[in-house]
Image 1 (cartoon, helix red, strand yellow):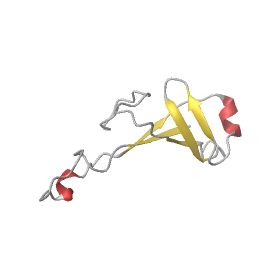
Image 2: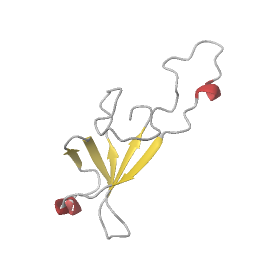
Image 3: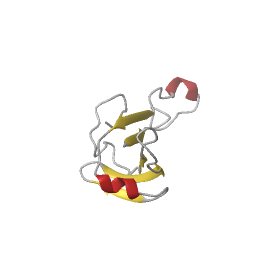
Length: 94
């Protein structure tokens, strides 16, 4: 299973007049993490939404087809500043 998390595109909460948005582009907006999941996850279809305990809600972007084409889950943002998953990495909310 691949868990995909996204972060904000802009690093500043509110751009002020005169700010060049290019100065505040976040270079780290994507984090993929390979995890081992329950065999039942193979039954998920595209767009199914599930809650992973202690991780948060995820939407199935690509269903499981084989070991070479694993299930891909996209994290559903919940508005919290910090991720429930606590994935250590480059994302600001992690």
